[in-house]
Image (spheres, rainbow, N blue to C red):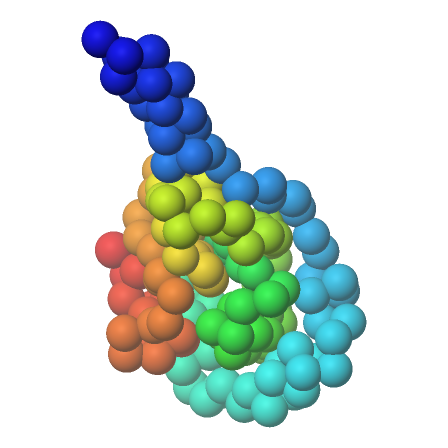
Length: 154
């Protein structure tokens, strides 16, 4: 019987910790590229012009992209600047929201965003007409631009 009050307090607290959101705030590309290392990764990206041409035809038409990233995260630093460079090279205006997250305060928190089930950063979520059509999570499978093409070809 003495354990019941402890369980009554501990269980809700555990649920709060496990399912709490990490603070997320929108950030612009200029802020992302402010850091020397991020700018360097942007400058070093040299997308193939032929692949960019293929990508151009798939951009637009109700496409929107949300990018969850951590300014503290090496994978974000490695993949977000080239993503920006690829879109710049394509020269097609696509609405992109960059959403910066803080580190998870405890490992038991599963998602950076419960609503969108973002577990790892960076996460690139592609929408067409408001419907999710694909994601690139943490590290691309074939390569960033190749994964983008595969998602946008759906």
